[in-house]
Image (cartoon, rainbow, N blue to C red; front, side, top):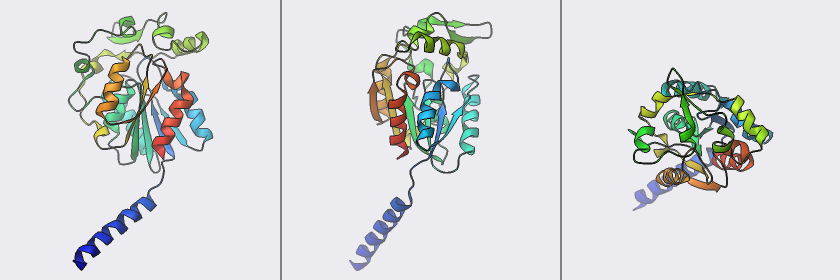
Length: 247
């Protein structure tokens, strides 16, 4: 009996020591999604930097899942200490793969895809009608997709002033359509604390799909009355969720 109590006491002591040594994350890595670039995170990054966080905005090439994961892994390698990894839209697929890095203390999904291992975007969309935004996608000669520039301010960023919508058009990056058939292999959300910001007025990813992802991951969830471009239109709320994950 005495040995049993001693074992329990030792375990509790180790747990207490671990809790005491645990530090809030002060690093944040932001991964942009399709049809935009790293500047889509500028507002969120500015807020977090003001609050003392070290923020890195990854420049995804959007050429393949492998290439985008490599860009994110490079950013993670440069971090010193616990890091919150954040993905918007297609960036959710990327952080699910790169998030197994031991530096990653939490994952934050913002209006993002969150496939499980073996799932692709094509598989996730089977049987579903295209969203209003997906109907505006246009392929180029290489098979890269872009949103019709005339439609982007409405379907991607309908809650932003026209001037900001035009800025997003100017920064649009095409996405290699081949990524829709690429299956996820890691799904780090199984092993990391996970947070999700649903965009209730999203015309790119159906809000119902976002809610499904959040529920399946058992994520701490907030719902924003936002378009798909929530890092721009609801930057304060997105930054607050990231801070919660950091703590």
